[in-house]
Image 1 (cartoon, rainbow, N blue to C red):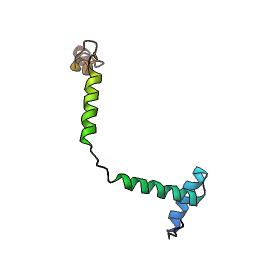
Image 2 (cartoon, rainbow, N blue to C red):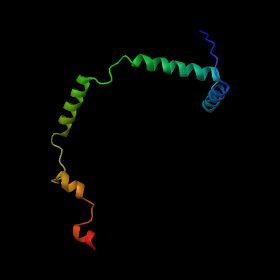
Image 3 (cartoon, rainbow, N blue to C red):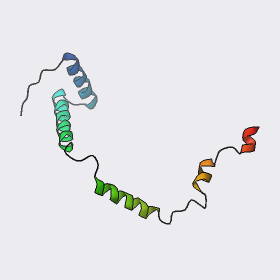
Image 4 (cartoon, helix red, strand yellow):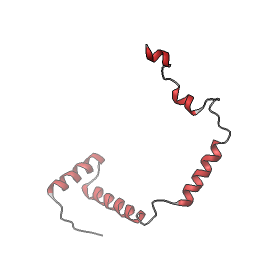
Length: 91
């Protein structure tokens, strides 16, 4: 299919530059950009948040976390690890 589109010279120059970087003819580069844009718009009909997938992901995370140990350390100890001791900080 052939479509004729009028574009500004600076847009054409940028498209030509992008095509050259990719080693493509400008027509092939523009066609690939249009194909990509068409696929993106078809994804627009999908919901941004899929509750079932989110719940399944949460369940999988909880499953993977079972039996995982922090070596006996608490979260507070992990946060404080590597910080100077209070006596060192006062010096």
